[in-house]
Image 1 (spheres, rainbow, N blue to C red):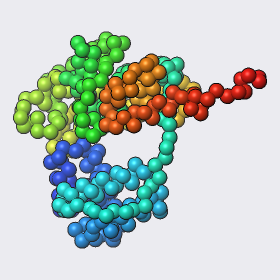
Image 2: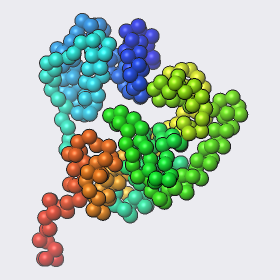
Image 3: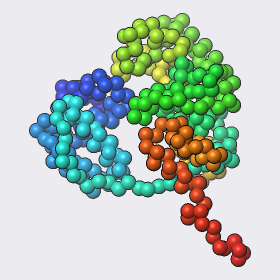
Length: 322
């Protein structure tokens, strides 16, 4: 469905933007609001409440068989709708909940990581190295800005990560020279944009108003800029956005196949492997928690299960027989 000019949906969009949510979150929330309205035969949300939300969420779990994370995404969108647009709290939601599968994360061995990285090059290799070497999520990697790289302290500042939190993560020594060389190329591209009358980048929150010249400054540019300029969907201004995450996903998938790895690995597997390999080397679990940006230590503890051999460390007796 294309962007609707419905006054109500525009009010939802305005409420999202004034709170500085990402463009992807905006699109997702708008889509869930539309689906909720259509499910209830175009009734206005102001005429509905917790009962109708419960029905919709139950429909998603029972009939559509969506995952727990998808159902939670729909719930978050509708809670936002009622709280921030209709200014009502949803109380008494008792929907059938989608099952949350309990899976141990897929992790690559050090040798497998090396094999995958050897099948990548250019910006795809650099992005993958940051995901594995610093535990970054894919979107955290592609959204990095020049100012976020602190070479002197061997650190990367991840701004507005999951949960809209900032954190500081390690920068691998092995990446310093490749990153410096990469940024020299990016700087020349930025200077070319400036010479052609462009060179502005989108800025987070109200920084564009507070610092009107910052958008053209080198430090605010993306570490991984797109190959071409495009129209900013928020402002209609022609700018150079960051590199597309789908390009990295496709490159990593190809590299995994070329490396002959049969595991169901993806970009996020680098982050899982980063955490597991740190714990294997004796790193304190709370330090790993901070590096990953987990709010709850129990989320980080899932990686301790990966370290256990077989069933909770039990050694099979078969070895003594064969």
